[in-house]
Image 1 (cartoon, rainbow, N blue to C red):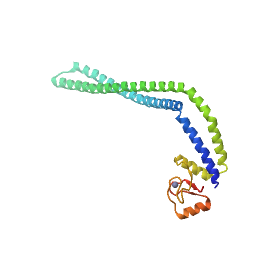
Image 2 (image 1 turned 45 degrees about the vertical axis):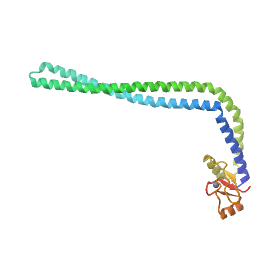
Image 3 (image 1 turned 90 degrees about the horizontal axis):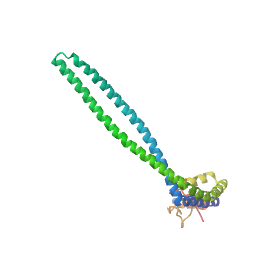
Image 4 (image 1 turned 90 degrees about the vertical axis):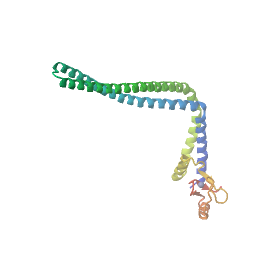
Length: 233
Ligand SMILES: [Zn+2]
């Protein structure tokens, strides 16, 4: 493996990472991304609330249907009043009416509770729509300055990316992948010099004699502890 090329790759990559993080740290970039994320959050909330509203509409329709049925039963029961012949029948009539009225009362409470829930829900929906609108407005205002700042940094980023692509062709594919894995794991620098006589320049773990011998022979080794690639300066 060509350690010099890999080191060159790392230098350029570190430069690119710094350029990207400097750009992300710009106030306009933070403002734009914040607006964008707020807008996305609001959209997700609106979507969720719409689904919930559909469910509640179906629930309330079901309850109103049940109420209508009870009302029909009540009308039907009332027609029996003309046929009451004795006290026993009058008792039955009363019990029947009371039961239906009781059921209606229970159902009316459920409908009322659900209506309150729907009203709260509507307020949440209104808030989410307002949040989305405001975030969109802020994002739209920030966009021209953000785009200008981005267009200023993009050529430098592209140039570095192209350099990396060119360099990749001269480096062993496994080594490049290993480097990328270390970078994803935030173990940067990923290619480190030997520290002192026998320690990893990244995690400073002391290595065994045979590892050092391999390092002197091959020019590089993988740290058994942090997986960084160690080389001799
Ligand atoms: Zn190490």
